[in-house]
Length: 265
Image (tube, rainbow, N blue to C red; front, side):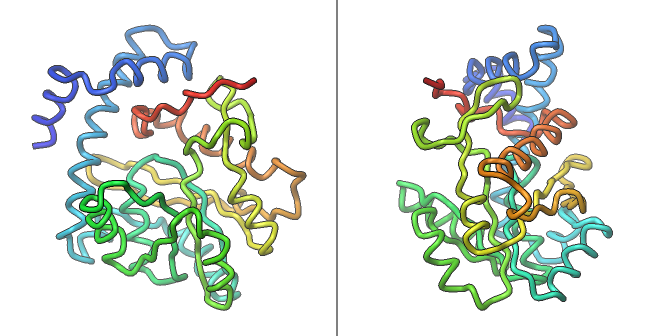
């Protein structure tokens, strides 16, 4: 079904092909036209899989979920160590791999109570559907506008609060930096909250092993203390980590997103 959907999406409707090819070309100027086209096709295959995988969340059982998305052993040890030390944490990741399944897996393992920062959708039906998909295994959601208030409210719990950090903020209030060879506005929210609440920030990778299978990875070097950075430094650090991840597996990032629609004044 996913392959048939790919044929329709790529060849018939050409869904956001202009955006995808422009994003890829600007991000990888060293690659030629054939290489960009190959990455684009691989991305659309992955993107169609991602859509079906996300809806599968509505029916998949716990055992299958943990088979299809796992945490590697070394990373699990680090998460357990932080939980044993009763340290609440901030998780930072991008729209890469299957971030929806990553949240489910983290909640199923139950090391920290997972809260995910999200944008409620304008369509009530789809918002309700996404809410069900994301909370089915115990994840709790926090609307972005209520982030700090809710984190303070739950400050006595052992929590992991997840930020998808590659969304597009308003350009006038954003922090600007080089990301994938382009001037890019990035959110400072995770850094600001981590500083105020004295929380460690963990950059988490979600790597696609093969079709339908993912692994969550945490490197010890990606555990960051906001006290060790100047203003904006922590944000630049975790954004650079994401950039490295994307360069290693470019077909599994969300290239349909108009990430560079704003230009720096």
